[in-house]
Image 1 (cartoon, helix red, strand yellow):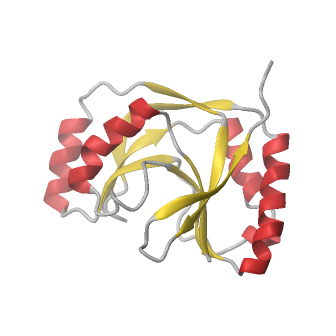
Image 2 (cartoon, one colour):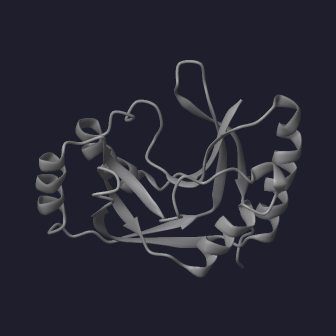
Image 3 (cartoon, helix red, strand yellow):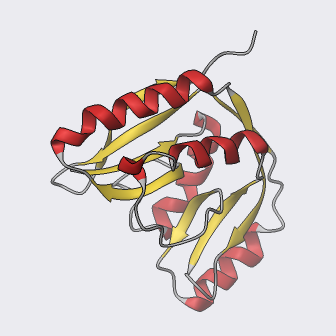
Length: 172
């Protein structure tokens, strides 16, 4: 099984991200806009129960929090990816670190954790520069409440679907 762990932002931000992804992201139809907490990884079907239990434990110990998005950025020259930048917060970094703590979830990480929501990838250099120049001047202020995260599974048609969602502890 091919799995990943993500946060899906609220509808407003998803719509704005998709307005760019339709044109600039070849993965647009494969998964909704998301923040990746755990890159895609392979797991045996007999490991999924233990992974789910680990994720339930983390969710039970993690309080709901907010994500803050306030600019567009890119990974060029490493990768031709343009994205909505998510401010690092202690809550987000703690969740990320806790998710990496299980041996079942320790896989080679291709990149350092840079919280973001991709809006374009596999772009030509000039196209990325043009899009970035235009978008960096637009107002970008979103507060996204994070109430849950999701274990997602890649289907045979390469599309990703939610395998299971994990509700975070609510602050009262």
